[in-house]
Image (cartoon, rainbow, N blue to C red; front, side, top):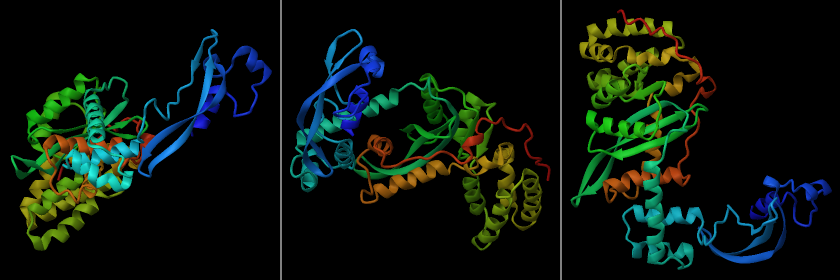
Length: 381
């Protein structure tokens, strides 16, 4: 990989010659030419242990005639560990293990090459990256859609295991790629907590989104109404399904689920309208609390029908955050209680930043630029 990087910088492979026109004009990257001069040995520690690698050396000559030593971007100066190794060390530390225990736990993997000072340096680097991530600008981010939800994790507060809520905000770029914008512990899902998270994103340059997907929590609804009251909002259909079941006796759960899924997963807006009316009429007679719960959601439960059909699957739920949380829990399942509230948010971010959890594009991303149809479904029952 490093050899290929140098080949690109010199515009020729090893032992290759630059065409005569290139030599005269210096037609390499930014008019740069140069020559190789051997290798130097570098010691690198990765998840595979300690190895010695031969790093190529070269002198680059700029168009102005100035010579400089070539530096690899793949292997930084003074770098002694791979990113995967740093992620492994940081992950162990974030899980609540102190520096000496991390050294002992990973000694077999790294051949005893991890000292407590190494762990401390890695931690300071991770903490610095975390602080920078929380302060980064969104001015150049083409975010057009937000997915917002709270997720519960267990942490140790005052020596007791306590469930806390992380407020998570995912953004969807114009090309459909999901990106984590915020993961914060604000003490709960109150309107003030959500407003603080949103105000921080706006302060850092986040533009007004074109579409919102929410879990239906009262605090979040109030915060969004005050900030972006005119933005089309989709209430998560999975959360509403759970609400309906909570209003029905256990013996009716299967029937409620069947009727609800027939309505939500209908193939057209017109069909959804018909099945909604049928659902309301049936359950008003059978279990009024279920019908009232569905009506409470209003047209926000069906905002997805204003989008192209190809987007319906990704637009009607907050499942992107739910799946992210499931992956998060799967990776920390042996650590049932995290050491602190800040650690929980940091570990959530670190698993994504290290590439241990990846997010794909949303379904129907090819039609994200299409405007919403200005015809919400008819709620007349």
